[in-house]
Image (cartoon, rainbow, N blue to C red; front, side, top):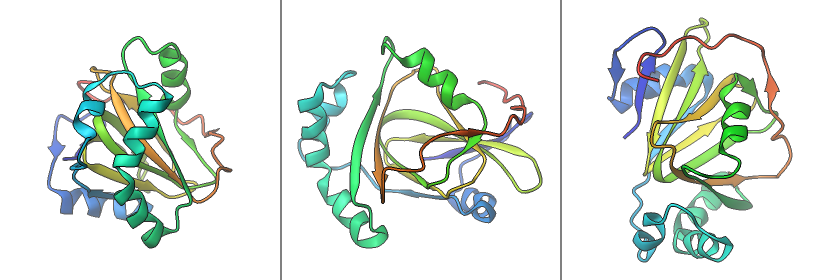
Length: 182
């Protein structure tokens, strides 16, 4: 279940209707899609997955991909697997922790672990949304956002694409506000 927190506040919002209402002006959508694929448990339990294991996990999650193809027209998908000790973890964390936009939508289905997406609201306020296994998030193009891992530094997320272009981050140089507990 996703949890929303405002910068400089300890208040956490877990009611999905309130979360959706706060993010709606940005066009950001969050919904739950339970991870219940047969054969996924053993793959999800592993911190690291080689290319064959990643392909196997995507295959057991194929029903979600097919549904999203029908609903949203996605043509491709891949799997992001981050874990403590990942050789590029510090570089990736630094790259996406800064506030940026993309020319294309960003879509993630979290199947294991957790991560934090942050957003700049229309009034300039900043919020962070912690997403966990079973959360699906859609961020439209040109929405100011960032991403970071939580303390566990472990996430498996399926990325969905209509096309592969538009993924270069365009940094806004807006200062990131303080989030207690992050």
